[in-house]
Image (tube, rainbow, N blue to C red):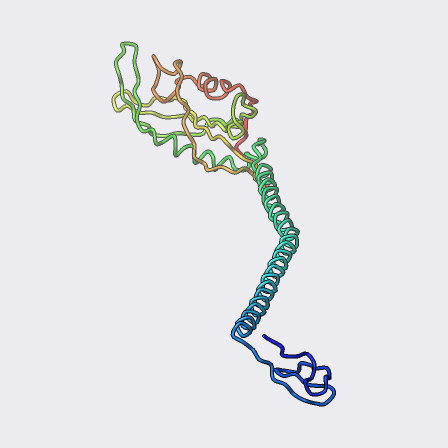
Length: 269
């Protein structure tokens, strides 16, 4: 760009640039500015540089905005995390308390069940129900319908059972070396009648027992009345009746005193 004269050619007044022209402050003359091609290119580059600067500034602003948003989001996440911790801790404590309550409830139920299962049976607990035990034991006893007898010549004689009558009953408690459910036993001895059609009747003795009796809080005892006959020992065999004792005292010894507990005779009221 070339400036022809910085002073007004008319009056030597001072020229001032306004828009794309020069104005004389003294006489008011107006002069055009003569641009060449290099001036136009410089102006274009200047304008593009200004736009690029404005774009970079905008991009920097946008990036800064994103950074600010990221920081805000991180702060919010951290705050939510610290807010959630107490609630999570409360949930864990409540769950543990619930589990512990269930555990102690189960323990209490087990303790209550143990209290209910009272195996410390006394004669007074059994006496009022003795008739029921006698009848149940007789059914068990009569299920043994036949037995064999060895005579002095070792000849086997077969006998059929015709009757079993109550002889005596004993409550045995504190039986050693037994679990709690078997520390007591009710033993009922029956006078058994066997018959052989050629030899006639033979009177023997046998026992039925009930174990695991529990005290009923409402009175009496709790039992399934499922009696069992006692397995014979070697003394019951040989010159004797199978499934019976020819001698009452031998029957008593093997079925009652052999257990080693406290023995009390019951009365059939």
